[in-house]
Length: 283
Image (cartoon, rainbow, N blue to C red; front, side, top):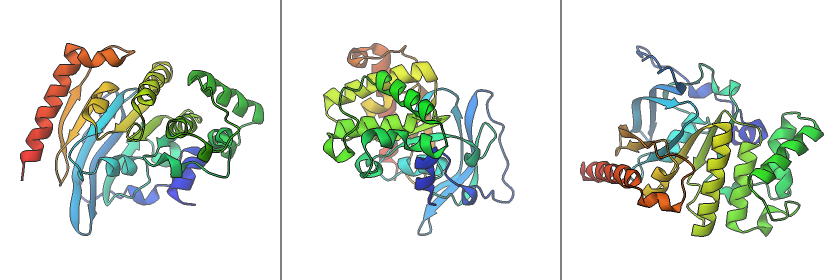
């Protein structure tokens, strides 16, 4: 079974090949509030290094966004952490556990293709729960709870291809959250949505996060999106990629459209833009 199939089946991709630790690697201790610990992460393509000895701590229960220049490996980074892409070297641990012992949820950038077209929307959401062997009444209760949480007003007995892009994305998010993941990954969750649906999903993700406190990583190519939901913004460099800066953003939630006019939002976005421009200027 592929890593993708395992992820959809229950949130635990098999990642045996992803954690080969290079000889001589010196591990740095993780911070006390760390959920995901990354040490010595290396990855290259065609002999060209992308990541080389990356160390990174992802704090527990926070929303972390990843932003950087095109081609710097934002999606590659979360795909390696999620076990969808093997690494060349290094170690990734979740509370000291390997990925195979961790439940994750993943919302793909191309969510239309990630949904199973032969299943109804509801069955797509139920799929990881059924594969885990959950009893029918428990599955129903969990999915009904998600329907209430996301205020779903469209017919989930229809198939994904019958829905708008925003509705498909909502189904993808609900499926990722169904098994109560310890870590949630979202790859460009707003890139194909209109503004109205973006505002709606932003609101609902905040509500769910306030309740569940799931550690969340979001990749974004839009700086406003990267800052808006985040507790911390990781700004990446050009290749070979490293973290140029990690900016904390402590604006209280819920954050609405008016938050972009808040002086704290403007300040963090301005700092992020300054760092981004600096990295673009590096040859």
